[in-house]
Image 1 (tube, one colour):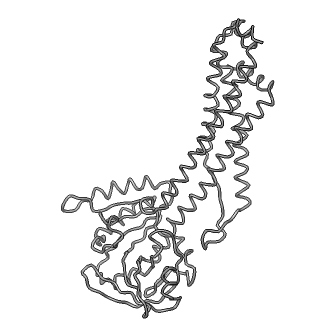
Image 2: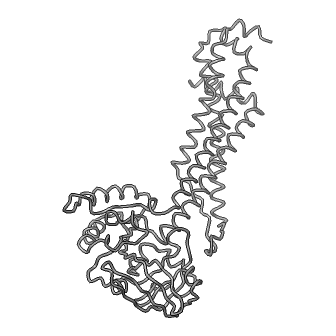
Image 3: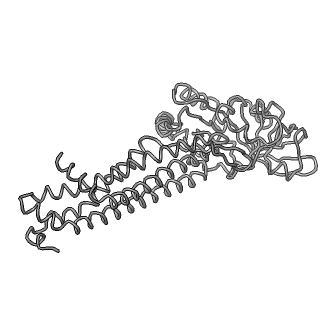
Length: 414
């Protein structure tokens, strides 16, 4: 095998221009794919963080059937205090859980004493909420961010603040109907204005959990949902399966599940955009495969055509077809290895350069978001393995043709 490799290297050196051009094509393909994966991955991670770290959390636990009725924010599907306590016990025992936030979600009428509109509200414990969705404070565009809010205060979404002409420090009234049908009103002071966000969270205001219980006349510690933040988002699938197993085993008197668990992917339309990014990455990889295959096949077909006499000579002196086949396949393999190696080196240098340059851009009202392209070793190895494998595979047909040539016919070729 060592002699075949030496011969293959010597043959590639004999046709330097062709070798360099082919390797350059492979190198450019590898660079394009690795840079696209790293940059698109950075945008994807940033987009997911905007959703999970400022609103949803990584996972949410509800009472069975709540999510299907979430548009109406049903209070009769809240988790009762004993049920919430069981979920908290499981979350406290999980080493993968960094924080969780107990929430009551409700609909109310928002009045500035002149006009009235409807509003959706997330009632939270400020400390828990800040630990679970740490980027929530960054969405505050006016007013104090410190401590999020206190009892008697409300964070108003920008859309409603602008439409109702309310500002920080103004007093408003919230009127809500509890699950028994009774109506109650309560005054609040506008603590801050919250930046709008696409999706159902764009009209959500925030109040204190204690205020929601007073407004809705809830005497126990029932809640609507528990938002969960993980220490490592890569553990989401594992933790989701574990919670489903543990909570799914809890049944009610009718032997039906009490809880349902959802990842952020089930709760946000942004997941479809993330899937589009993954699909685009797949198409770019397919293009790379096509470029490598066409390049290698073209080079090897030309190599076979130009070296017909040479093939006839080595076949005439007793070289078996399998050895000739191996020689041409090794040449294609080495072209793939050489082009891939150079492409990986240049790509990693370019990624390091972009991180060192600290390229920033604006996203909505958020200024100076840093582009931090990264790529995992597994992704680099996967791309390299695909390119090298395709290079060897693309050499198979020309190599097979060369190994099956008749020596006499090949020696007569001009």
